[in-house]
Length: 81
Image (cartoon, rainbow, N blue to C red):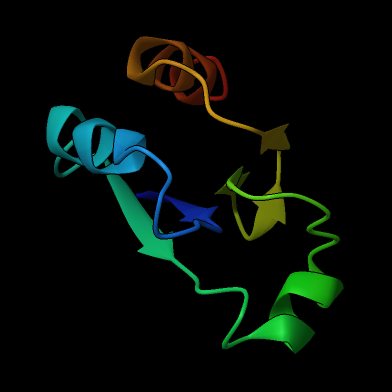
């Protein structure tokens, strides 16, 4: 499974939930509250929220800041197979 980490704000749309459902069993999705975990946000270089960080073998393969349609995220995840 490829994990992704989303750094959300409460008012952001639940796009990652849709991605997680559509790719269930193929990826693992983690949500991090940057207000409660500022050290992790700083370590990951999060400058804006939401930020989606798909990784493969423990390394971030893409950085996607901002909200994009679920289909776009799915295509970008699949591109890193």
